[in-house]
Length: 288
Image (cartoon, rainbow, N blue to C red):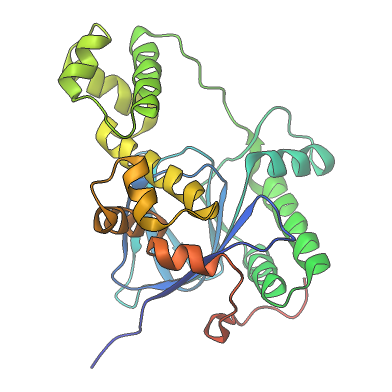
């Protein structure tokens, strides 16, 4: 007997600028450690997702939300044999900051305090944002998104702590990141990078992991996928994007892109053209 099929759709709706949208059902899928430039607001409809976040595993069941701040490393996998089905919105920091300034008393950059919130009402709002985007209802999609973000910030929001670069190790990590960003297509070895920064490989490894939640090679893969996404959004072919960001070929990009984004780069590029798929209609509350 075969289990449920894995499906995912990652797209944008032009009337919701600065927001990525996702519907997915995963069973065997495992997300490697990665980060997002956006906030993650993911509402589980069925099953359980578990993800590693700030040193421990957290579980998200039906009616609950996974909430991850930008540039925060995390993973993702099924928490039960049948996997999980969910819908997610990924708003950019400027959008969330604008909503927070208008509707909350949060000072500074807003962020989510807890990575999991049990709130079926807010979860239903997320699903309704996706449905409104599918239906081309711009007024509803924008309204529901703002209501959902406001509710989540009021229930589970606060100012994000500033990342102070005080220690020598933290300063080295920042410099190492800048080198990797600049030399993404032809990065140095760990030994070369450490020597250039005047430290040892293991000291650099510890400092980088402490600052960014992952070792330099994992961060570089994540950064390459981020840049590849921007290239694909601009119309670059997956094969050219792979070479541009430093992957050896398109299959190399395909493998890492799917492990981080959840869909292959070709499907990602096609789906963000707002191709509707009736399989992704979610049952959601009738009122928001």
